[in-house]
Length: 399
Image (tube, rainbow, N blue to C red):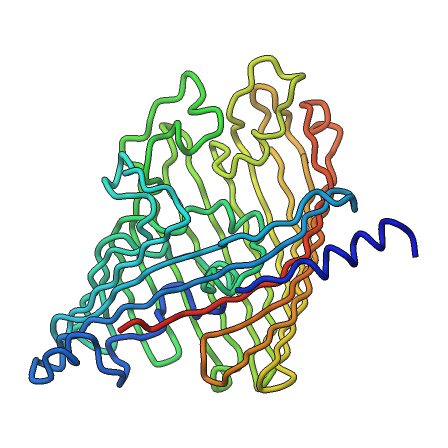
């Protein structure tokens, strides 16, 4: 056994920590429709049952070892995510949801006048089973299963989803044509803060700030064959700056039956200004005056296979293939392909208690990159990365 292998095994044995699981992004652990009494109902048993309040604490922590090109970098414990949510209802037709992350900056954003650590702050009106409307900071209605899934259940996001600003202030309306067909129309802010906070090198010279920085989304969610086959498709369009727009086309194709879950996500974005900042970040020391790239496009394909082989055990293998390019020459950036990224993941999850949100996992990740000559000419560097982690995730219904 060589020295590198001994180091790897040693790090694996030392990387013992803890971490949790969750539901879909906008679905809390406890909802006003559940039979569990809310804090308000417990304190005041005679209060109107349509008035409720619940509190949940989401906790995710891990110990991980990091490698670059197979060479050990470091091992450390990490609090990956801590979130507190409070939600409830104040009548039969109105409910509300507030959620704050303690892993984000708490500075107020200039555009929506709200702390960047606040993920949800909205009121929902549901006058009938076929229609509801949401006002406030909410989840942007895009397609994709990885995007939609609660972030506590994702060990490693694709780069595409990692860079999407998923929570924005706005207004949405959902139409349920049947129990299996839903159409969502949404208008939100495209950004929360200033352009200088969004783009790695700020807004390029000569391009004026958008007067209406909004993002419009159309989202269709459908299920078939007794919910075995599901689709989440969406198209989003918004203005980044004067004459610079962004387009998202996102889709999830899901098969779930018994212990098996399969999904294939396809995510595409065309950006007047490099919103993901991946191409802009390739500018190294060889570029004297780096600027934010324009006319960029990104494509991501994600495949996942989950299998619950025992009531206490689940395993999955997941992979992502991503490309980044420029569709129209500008500044330092010529038209063409710049980078390909892929990752492969394997994870085993253990649920000590049935019907509990407690989950312990062991996860392996390999992330590879390939730069084109264009990217290298800018000074781009993209070494392969590996990570071994063990963790614990838990959602605690406080009240």
